[in-house]
Length: 370
Image (tube, rainbow, N blue to C red):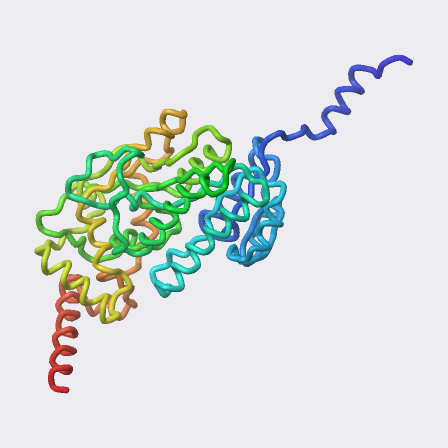
């Protein structure tokens, strides 16, 4: 029997989709935020065989295989069967969430995913924390290497959870031989995010603590997703820091943003922040201030050595952040309504801090009378 005509063979080959030999990747927290962006990116990649999307609601990526459940449910192990890699992005870092509930979700969720991944035969888990785990300290090197000691404390929003996740990441390969765990640590994340650090730029004045040495490094969510994809494809592994190249000094930030500073003595700024948070007037604890006072810039050398480069510069990310927060008004980490912001006027931050201090004084006097 003669072989088919070459043109017929070519037509058959064109009609048969090529077999994708890449990994099957499961993404938790896939319905929103970074998880949704990464799910869409991986589903569109020719290097990914299939995407399994896991969340408490269905997202918009039609190309993914969806499973609807809480990541703390041990049944997640069955949903992970057949996956080669899991990217765990189901974290709650919302400033308004109750701290105890947030920690219970973040830590228990990570524990469950790591245990379930090992039980399902997954060989690689990718976790995402933050470069905040290095801590913001006056003697930090500029920039920090990935191997730098994690010197953060649990005093800033969510950082205690991130440190516990880092501990779980280190312990998992010993508890589950054969399970590889990578951790990606982004700098100040921008792109649809709401954190104490992005709210810093919603203030009418940029609070600068006297004697501090801020250094600003950003990470756009698109670059984070790109770095996560690099890790999924095993082009790099281990503990990875990701951010824009270099950093901006406080003076550069003020010049680029057009927002003037309000400088306060350290004791005043930290004391006021602690008191305001303690009486429930602001969502941010005093520990968040350290990340606007001292450097925590990362080199990202491991990703760079693997050939990855950020597509965004610090200047470009700052410009996008300023556009995102335009029209929002925040003082001491608390969002103000339009009426409140107008009342604050040009001296916004100063008026708000003085007013808050007056509230504290009145509360103290009232307690003394009782």
